[in-house]
Image 1 (cartoon, rainbow, N blue to C red):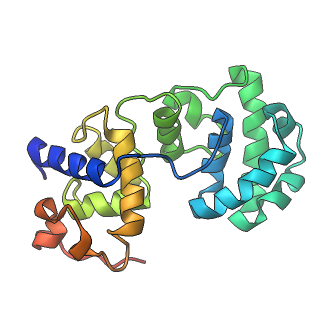
Image 2: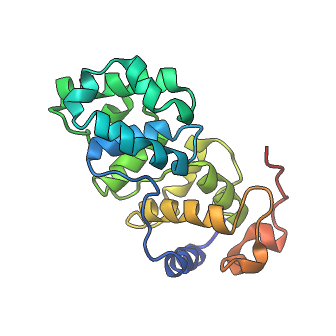
Length: 219
């Protein structure tokens, strides 16, 4: 595992490479981010961003989503995959946000996890991006892969284990943006099948590069 000094160096190097640690999903309203993140399951953010403008134009308010026929919502999100379950979750989420939370995305982990289709990854992202909660760790596929390679975690592929290992390691005020930078870094440099180590600014602190960890086989 890394020392606090090494962790700080990794965080700062990523901040230098990606000064704007923004969420890849495009949205204007808080509940739109919740919907976009639900759509992103087993789907790329780029695809979600192609789908949501027409979806949000057809259903411009939370009330219109709550009153929507899931079958019609499904027509707009068909290309995101699993559209039947996603459309039902979106409509039910809208209904519950209005019925239970006065139309607002809730802040607490417990409340977020009580919503249809919302897991810890989504809940942490919403808490970090909407409410800027310190310690919000979004353990998505990029974060899991790269932090394992770096030696910030023990290489576990279990999202909850990775989240619990990273939370005491990362500075709480940096964790949400760090995870956004992991996505950018994972797409550009530390890719799944063939990491571009020759372009990497983190090799000095990387356990994979130094041979301290075995090369994993990506599925």
